[in-house]
Amino acid sequence: MFLLVRDVSRYAEWGPLFLGLFSTAERADAARVAYIESVRANDPLREQAYHVPDLANDVRVASIADRRSVVEAPTVFLVTLHAEGMGQSFRDYLAVFSSMDDASNCAETVSAKAAIKPVIPEYVSIEEIVPDDTAYFTASPFEAFTGGLWQGKQPGERSNRALSKEG
Image (cartoon, rainbow, N blue to C red):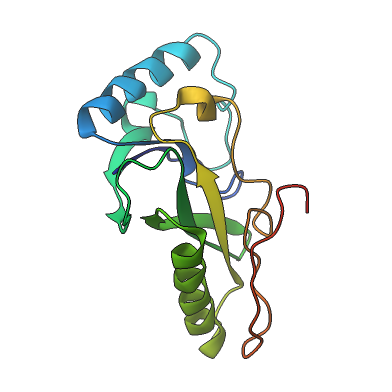
């Protein structure tokens, strides 16, 4: 699978911004061209702190660890690590899974590792994503770094962390 992301100032947004998840590099490249054309005339991120936007370089396709057991699933679960410190924030898109259980296991492992020796605050989230959908150009699946379908608890606590989309 392939991510379409946009690099932005780490002082302004949780970057890189998620623009979509695509089943092939060709679909991701086509979506990249479509996104750039859709914002070229009126880029909502044309002014950023400590970053001069350059759509050709900032909008990019990146591969992601594909850990799906069901390749043709209509939705997938994206596990993301969020970190913030010294006024900056970023996202690290870790892996894609076909089940919430598998994604939750990954999120628990990453969260436990982050809790061992925290240097800066780190958070893990899981978002349910529809592959090959360009709706994410304007509607981010990330409510906030503590949002999403999964929200970690303190180390050692075990429970089903799947939350409803409302909660």
